[in-house]
Amino acid sequence: MTIPFIDIHTHISRTSDDIISVQSFHLEELDFKDPIKSFFTSAIHPWHADNFTDKEILEMLDGLLSNNKFIGVGETGLDKVCQVDFDIQKNIFQLQITFAETHQVPLIIHSVRSWNEIMPFLKRSKVPCVLHGYSEGAIITRQLIGLGCYFSVGKSILNPSQRLLEAIRMIPLTSLFLETDEAKTPIEDIYDQMSKTLDLPLDFLKYQIYKNFTSLFSLPSEI
Image 1 (cartoon, one colour):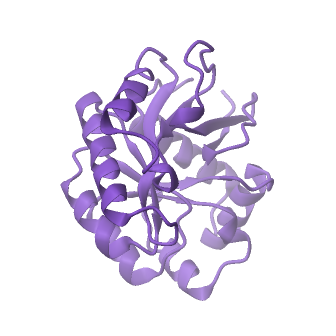
Image 2 (image 1 turned 45 degrees about the vertical axis):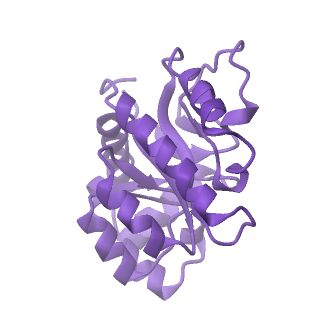
Image 3 (image 1 turned 90 degrees about the vertical axis):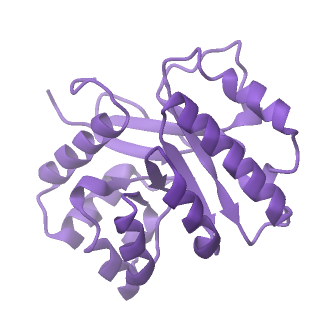
């Protein structure tokens, strides 16, 4: 089989014979009467954490379970830049972590200026965590590697800082993913730049990330 590019987190789905996109949806936007046909994740984003009661969120999360393309809870996390009360964010984050643990699905993590606060949640998590849009330096990266996290790097690799380059070279290949998020940049360009950064053949990088994908989400080796 031809190994596809894996776009682990995108809001612009481009799934084709050559690309598997994992589309990220805001939970409240989903229409449960219209099943999603591609792999997807969904959650209450920290920006919207004060819009719903715990009961409403759990009811929406439960609605995901009937779709066999639902493979992860996210993006969820903590964000110190948005205006939502931080205690409310932490409550909703923990609610969604508990749901993910109950149903044994990975978490897609959003963190903005909140690593000190988010680290204890990651230490306690009983399911794997993918750190979306990752662009931190070596010190935080070393701590997160120790917690067994996965790292998803996006368009920042196209014009990386020296601190990001240092961090990327620390990340185990078995813990690496690539993404487009909201960028219109083709996932192929992000792979191409990462293969050059790591001095790895593109086909080898594609194969490794494909293996990471099928392993993390408990999918058959040939999708």
